[in-house]
Amino acid sequence: MLYRFARMILRVIYMFLYRLEARGVSNIPLEGPVILCSNHRSLQDPITLGVWVPRKVHYMAKEELFRIPVFGSLIKAVGAFPVKRGGVSKEAIRTAITLLQGGNVMGIFPEGTRNESVGMGKRGAVTMAIRSKAIVVPVALVGQYRPFRKMLAVYGAPIDLTPYAEQGTSESMEEATELIMSRIREMMKTSQPAS
Image 1 (spheres, rainbow, N blue to C red):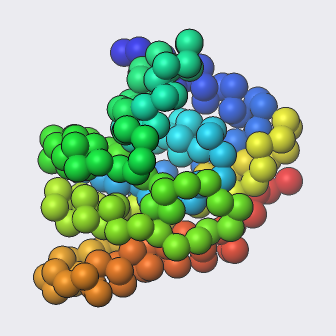
Image 2: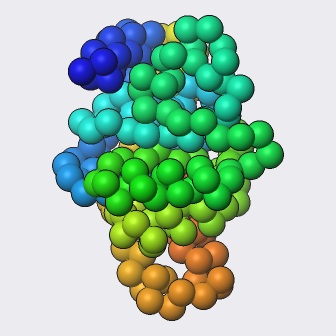
């Protein structure tokens, strides 16, 4: 209930402030485990990624963010869970896989850090997708967070990781990761916010 209320308020704010438009929301399955893999430019990206998604989206977030007054409570309310400093721990991965196995949606930024251009992804998202049998939906967040300048969230067609899961090699995991990142790069190039 709190999540839906927060999402509704944030949707109105983002539509007004950033003229946020969503494309391809129908590519997100309405049930079952889903990983939304997105590029990452700003601390605001988790909100932009999830505000138009019709399901609750869970995120990993740095532990210290939960200590910020008001903001910490807000990100917890909108589906974030803490990750300790120094990278994603096995505990955080287990939590994510458990959430996915429960049929939930995870929002993940495979680069692991913020970048202006879409760089190399880390294998964590692919590992979690294969272990939980989650569907991967690539997402491109296009535009800058400038007041009244248009932002765009593009949800691409789901990516089938079955061939990579069947191989189960380190190389196949790298190939699957690069496939996801290349799809995001392609959507970034071909998608522009309407004026």
